[in-house]
Length: 213
Length: 402
Image (cartoon, each protein chain N blue to C red):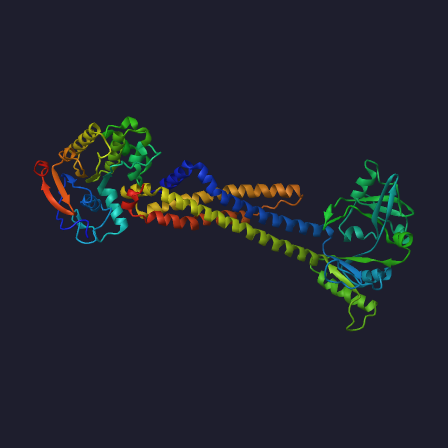
């Protein structure tokens, strides 16, 4: 029994892809593979032309550090430290100096419109604000690929629309590829391309209009 | 990742859980404090023994009639006592020594209303040098007084304190047994030595004790001091040979006297305290080990609690090594802090105890360095396993962890 079977998929730079499907359809596995959190037991995944299968744990960590940003359904900010420190955390692992970290983290927070909440801890932020901080954290290293696992799953409709608006604005601003898992057709409609998984197979691949029809 | 950032993270994690961090390090604190205190106290005890022995008189030999018996009490069998002739012979025949005779008798000493039973010792002027106990006020015995056995005495500081109070002892008359005895000198204060108060002394010319208190011309003990360090062995051999000859002991007959070296006593005592120090230190080291296990325990709990945090860190680009270093630094930092606090407590405790027991306060940098580096080593050793556990977490499972 394979989580994914017979999936042949190419995502091009700059695309905004929504991944849909019922629970257990393999969409999360697909995300984990794309994000190099997992490696395929069979088959091949090439990131920027490099086969990921042969890479060590550390090499995968470096890929994640420099080429990918993650946004999660449950935000996953570290509690008890400020929004600014959360955003700066990936730069700590990249070995950046304190001053430069602060500046870049502040710039990222500004780009998600939360500069004035930089000193708040996550418990002092609303859900929507936390997710925006998480997006700033994902983008602070300026990765080419943003992976979002149900980024609006814990938010009400208005906040969800806000987040989608923010992603659209960020895309317009920089060259970024977005892959986003979602349950909701309304959210998937913001993407250029929708992938629909059922039982580990890619059943539909097309524009939102085609797939969601 | 920079070292300063790793340290910063560890400090943050420790400060975040102040009570838990304190309780975690408590084991190390107690362990290091007890190791440092025990070993230091052991060294103090050794030093104090050494000092006491030095105060008895260095290179000192006791020569006594009878056979030395091993075991408690050191029972002596009776044998012919020494006479002043023996003392003279030793003085004449053996080079490089000072000789003083000794004859003690326990008797009542009275001054006005004060009445005490004291051990009164008859000896000669050499005693003050041989036994390393100088006359602080007044004078020793004059040659004429020694020849005639005059009723004069030199008394110790404790006798002065207990019997005279604020009165002037010099020139006063003490009744020793039935003899009225003039106090001509006061000894310098020496304090306790090997469980005896050396200041509780009344010294008279040996002839006075022989005639007035004992009624016989015996000599109870001969004190011999080698003038040159390291010659006590040779001196002891010469004394034995001379005394065997004078006492007409045939070849193969056992000695009917014995010579005891203070260095022997010192060595035995030092060895005892050294063994005790090692024992106490070992027991304390076990508590340090238990402290290390405490750190490992809490760090394992902490890794489980922070599984999700570890998942997040791995997802945003931390390598396994970064996570391992973070947890290892945390436990080493805890152990180091515990080591420092324990060191201070241990040294403080040692100071308190030595102060109360009037022991010399010995500070050994080697012991402090050892205790401290041992605690750091424990942090590394017991932090390694939890840190490795954290580093080996699967990022996906860690992220899913509630």
